[in-house]
Length: 167
Image (cartoon, rainbow, N blue to C red):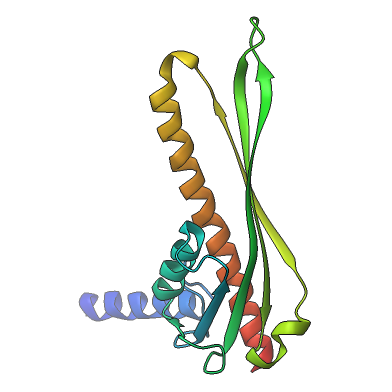
């Protein structure tokens, strides 16, 4: 009897979590199997690869042509800006801010030319020390990768939203 009650409570809890719209981070509901075409001037660029990996992890597929795709992502520009935030007493940079901006457009395959340019950006700050140049260069590279993954995840949410509106 106790075991049956435990199974019943567990089943009710799982049903209520599923019914409230909960889903695992990175999983976009309702877009499994969606074919996405990524149009870019640099198809083997770092952001393009991160985006393609994110699309696959979200149970979508990468389409080899825009005609067969359910959604076209047109990557127009990726810019990295590095700004000095603070300086130390000797006038050298002590903190930097990294800003990664990606310009893109989303559209159904037949409306790519009419799609508006949108921007997503990600910002990170880090302390800089001239005595640790190699370590700080590695830290900056890791931050840039994290920023690319962040923008790719936000872009996937927009793809899911727009795909839900076209069905």
